[in-house]
Length: 337
Image (cartoon, rainbow, N blue to C red):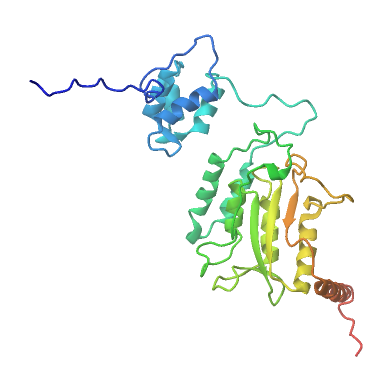
């Protein structure tokens, strides 16, 4: 008598979706205009290296799957480099009218036109990173523009309070390397701003000639606070008009705090956000209402003993400024003993 039991049939999960096959042609409605979303599905399937780029061969497979009438000549014009990003593919397909354009409608007459970065701007960058030790910096910064969308009209609603959004932020934005021994510089700040960063952090400490920036209690080399502010002003809104937040980790004495405030007002001017409302705000302003504005994030109030010190520092600085102005007006005048 056989003891073998009858084998159970294999269990099939009817809810499990089969793995997507990038080589299989999707069902395409010939009467429907394809969009960037349709291309994104194919792009993600073909991006086997998961580096956000595809090869010319993969692109050929993509447009055949989507039944787009791209000629080999046009394909070769696009692929002058081994790989292309999703944004580059979309720009090519939209400009050739292969898919529906996602670009916003033409602005009404009188609306300010959003311009792309001019060649002169890149020339300034090239000059800035011209030293032999930094020969790769220019190319590095320019490549950032290929990955950053310079659109002023994002798809999401930007009229909600600022606290409703995730914000691209920097930490120790001024350091060129590690947090113990590296050099402080404006170049990491510039790179962060050009990459779309909207929060820059500055650690401020007392210096002999004014506030300085460095990672405190380490061997990092400092840089002047004013130099950082000057560079931030130049590049704050090169990538986007949405607000920039400067987080200040403040370790300065009263005199340097007054100097910092004067420098911020002097360099940022009307761009510096000031809360002029008399009533307590129930919510933060929106990114849309804060366009082209720079917000300073610091301690919300001074201690009682700091208030008197700040007032004394103000008087001292104003007296020195008057003395400097007098010397400029009357350089040959001898001071009375």
